[in-house]
Length: 547
Image (tube, rainbow, N blue to C red; front, side):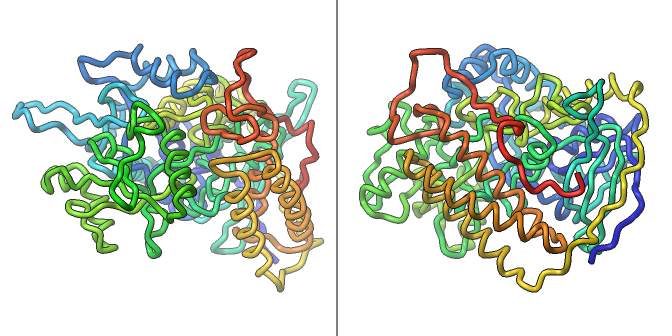
């Protein structure tokens, strides 16, 4: 049995410690108490693994309008133009804020200026160089700096190894859709459940790509925030648009290591094992085409020729250039005896980014009063049917700022919530067959990879839905009978995410952006494109405990 603590209190509870969550905390903490829950250690987040950078307009030849148009084009008709404009216009401001926090971005020293400019990379979908970066480990630089600032602030409490179980909401005449009053959290190190009361709760949990067998994401990316919001009654949008990064390192000992798109931005070529290039067969932009096109092209070649991978080659550049621009990738590949200054890099596509998510407005509010969602977990309208490279970190900082402004306006008028009741697990026992969790976890990821991956069909989606429904019932029964663990919570969330992806994919009877269905290979342009929005009231939502 787990132990329970009496309810603790905070002004703002942020679930997730990535770039979005930490940014928001720092923007609120001068006035309010902020508690951040991190499922593992504070520095383990999707942000940490972001290599490429942050898109923002700095070059004199570039423009806000150009960045907007590139984003709209990549989003295949489903971006919200107002949200795109709002986001892009805050690009320079976001970079300046990060620099003020202490982030050391790479500067262009080639011109010998006493005040060197920021070095700008170019990535797929962008018509200009506008990727501000810290070598090829931007996320690591950003997250380490923000953690330092957060640790220094007296009003910020960082709780590591805390896994959110469920949100607590109450409905009333004033709030018919519900008002959030806090959450239950599992302290996985001490096997303790803590009720946390909060005036505002913010979901900043990142994406959900561990739902797939092959992914660039860390193990924490199990869609926790999506599932928390869905069980609480929030709408979820565009989950069929799961982005597969075209180039992850293919090596038996390499675990989810991403080869940044910036390498292709600097002239790297994709090649078949015999050395032939192939991207010109699929898009006139070749290696700089958006990620969905490049990923499908690689997937097509792998299946056509029965090969396990293709190559990415940047060895035509000088060793000094490669080591200066891509030091992290160079060192990581060298660990696997691949010298990218002289050798080609074996690569395969892998699940990378969740473009859909919790429906939010321009201030990051969800359907539930007092509940916000920021970062990858939210569907803001920025990405549409396909995310353009390096717009994701920008979205984190922009919408953390949007949420901060909204919270600062509204918190003075919010009352202190009632104490949350203790967690009740009087009807459960400790499991003696936890192998079930590992088996179900593996089966979900294989089903999703085989049937709901880069290329889909109606038959594949139907098969996946049937199997996921069976797994959902098994997991619900297990969850109802046994004491919770962090692994069980992740599995419970993962199967919900899998179903949301499948339901969304089944509703879209066309191919658009990241969603490609062999039965509907073309876009349906007879009517304006629509977002796919799922509402919990239209679907049976199990797994609610201590409601």
